[in-house]
Length: 621
Image (cartoon, rainbow, N blue to C red; front, side, top):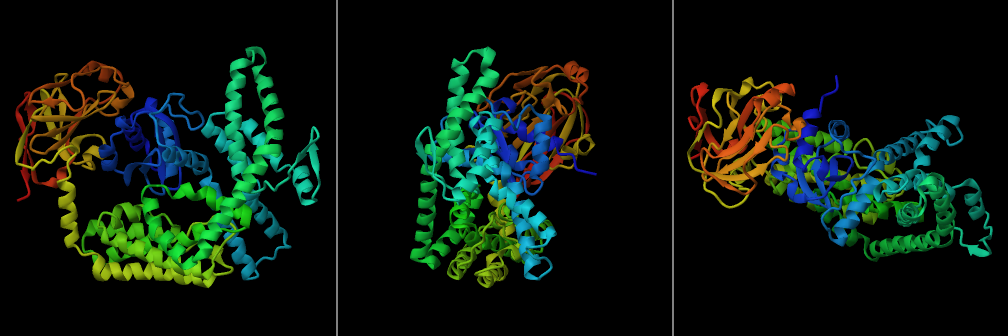
């Protein structure tokens, strides 16, 4: 039975600022990538603490929520439980971003949706290479030809796929965009190029180029088309927009692409490819070492897919790529470092985490769980992995390894690298994997880091430095206090967000249990985050699934950043509204920095009045 990710999806949507704060959403191999209107509405702290989220960050002009290899299922759950539409972008204007962030966000929005089919086609090509190497198949066999058509068609007709994704990104008609792309790879046009024909359009000479597998001509063409389409929609009469808009777009944009945009971008692509090969050619060993060393940092910030256009342009222009090949052993390096932690640690929880992350990284090439969950938090394993990634990059560049497709690096994909430089690539991967594992085991990790890391996390504060002190929390409502384990929600009952208690409220008044500051107010009013003057971080969650009420029945009396005293009114809740909506009105009170405390001692369960003592917190001495 498939796992239900609805609760996780709702939590993510709520903490990126809700449906109305999202301009667009795409996902890549491991992360959800949101473009938002106001990043100040994004609650990174809760996102990072949410079970099922590896980490969350702002990078490349996007809010990136790292999920891991279940990202596609979480993505589907987000679309089902929200009004976010993967096909239609919010017309609201986001806050201004820098040129680099805008460029990276655009590239990600265009290429991320197609990564799955691209990697699948690359793997299929790898399997066919393996089959022909071992003489299981020959290129003349029907089986080979059909499977090769399935794999190579993705790359051959790449402009059509890019036309669709670019249209989605630039918010114009995807079907007209695909029609423009189809004209570029239309058999008669490709035959004219192959035959060296000289064509004219209205007596204007046409510079024919090969558009199969090309990247930049179609992207720029669709960007121009998006501007043209907006102009047409403003000036054309409503009665004829339906047919006249696509008619004029095809009549203008297809010739414009063949005459101007295509030839210019083809020359630019060749210049970019020659520039890259020239840079690597000056000293491939140094270039490979620098690229390999810096690549883990690009992965951390989710910027690695920003290089995808360069890779695709290399394949289209040169027939092969070396950039993703040079950086490929980084997967093995981080997998090896994680294995070193797995072998060294005696901590049961870390051993379980590092074991699964190391297996995922080496077998499937998914490194985010390894990086964010294991190597990066303890720093030395990450640095060791980066160093061996650089060493491996030098070896791969020196060996001249290159492949004619896009392929991730893992044990399963190694056959795809068979060809020139294959032995060097395998040696580089082995050195990256075993070198990182051995060095991490010998001097890159020990269990004393667990305590240091925990202390660091415990003392990390959201705003200013606060020394944790013993503290007593008071009741937030008049009602019955019950154990947190009795809440009918596995996230709260399992204490995934932290320890605490829960209340069955008798009154709709929800008051502050501490003197402190409001650090989070859900837009729907159903959740309040507080930080006490003594360092306790508290989440008050009013009702189960009440986020779906969209604020109905919740009268919030405070705002984020406001100072509060114990007993100050936070929210007035209409309990009858919750009941009429069919939701449970139970109110968990969670210590989100539970690990900072030595003891969390609930008082006697049962009926409580406002401001009665409910929990004693004892800090670690």
